[in-house]
Length: 191
Ligand code: ADP
Image (tube, rainbow, N blue to C red; front, side, top):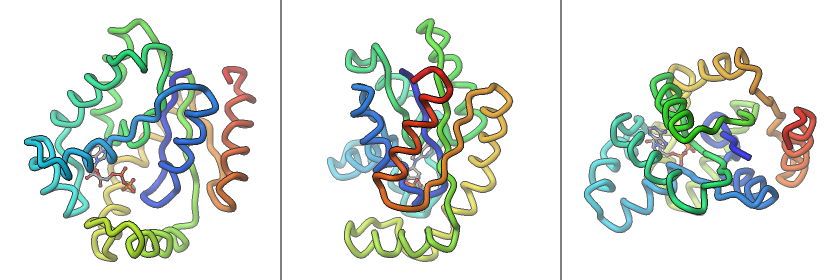
């Protein structure tokens, strides 16, 4: 099973990704988590990514693309994976298409979580107080939402046209949303 999960910042992608990946026995690969791990470890990749992340901007494609290419080539991703936070731009979609066709595999579904934008800001501010993420200030949250609307929301139509889109209501309890996602994937006949 090869999946991607999309949704605006704060939609709960990371939380859902963990449960969905567990269900299918595949790794959940979060570009945001990989970047944050590199920032914490002080690697060159982390130093590069940090400047963009702290401002709420996207890390440049060439950095992100090669990171994902290497990650999905690892053994644990041979039979499938769930990408959380990638692709995020039209150019990244083309890159991912190339990676998959090089490997002779294809995506099974693109899950998008739909949420109420008002609720999201509150959620993110709440998360900021718990996790202490540098990119969870109100100003940066707004910037991330803006960039999502400009650069990532158009991907929804791309995957819809390919017949891969699985739209799921992301509001409600975590386990309710997980159930909805699993059911929606199973309805496509691929789950
Ligand atoms: P959220 O979806 O809540 O904004 P993530 O943890 O997915 O948070 O990502 C945090 C930050 O990491 C993004 O704001 C961006 O700077 C960087 N990032 C993650 N994935 C990508 C990507 N595919 N392309 C560019 N930048 C990315």
